[in-house]
Length: 360
Image 1 (cartoon, rainbow, N blue to C red):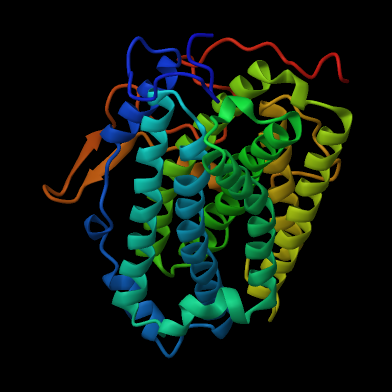
Image 2: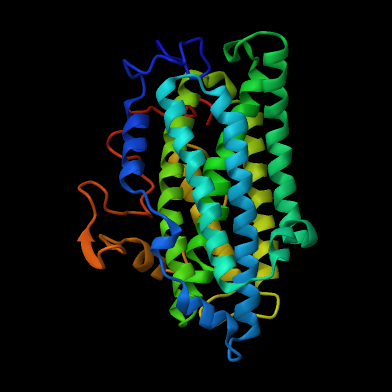
């Protein structure tokens, strides 16, 4: 490998590509560019201020919005401060820079909704005041901190990341699996496509639901990139894949799903809404957790997982998009059709043999 992920390699030398799929995926995201202002939220303003709005709907909507706006800031910061620093090939860094921008765009989208609906600004503090939210942020910090420590040590000692030991490589891989497969692939995914989409199906918050669809499209690309990057990392640094490490990932996933259950229980603390309940949400989150882990060759831990919301595909598998400036309907660009529930890597990704076969 002439451009190892951890180096040594010239991070300023873009070509020849060692990972052409990373460049191609970044180009696809360029073609999918959008802005929150393109999606009208005037009907949402009427919904939010309506005296007829069910208090359960309002609490659910605000709770999901509060968690997601915190999460996008957190994800953008972590990607910029850890994985973008550690990965050395220029084309890998190129996608990550685009990804960090998209997380900031998502933050702009949430603020656009919050501002237009005049949601009280204490919504930005709820990650600190609601225990069910704070414990998830705390888990993120606990996984990021060892990686931040590694970066500090490498820089202070004047070394490069190719010099880090097995335990440090495992910390990097653990963080990648958590953030790409679980944080974005489950926590983000089910919140974006679940509760608020059901509120839309019940006639409320259409604009916010559509914002979430656009955000989910970006997150799908992030998950796909992450899967390819994780597979490549596993292939290059197969010594990381010990039985203890695989068990650690399993524990992380189970903890994350326990926290997911606490989060949605708070969001639905006054009881389920029509067509959406805590057990269904959790089962679906487990379904996607199994999918994400299976896609990178790791054991799928949940026997009780199932997809409770087939209408998610109705929301996401769109082949047309609105042009809000010209008010016309256009076909997605060639190759840009959305297929969100496919666990298989895009055809532009490299072939990969499972490095866990011997371990299992």
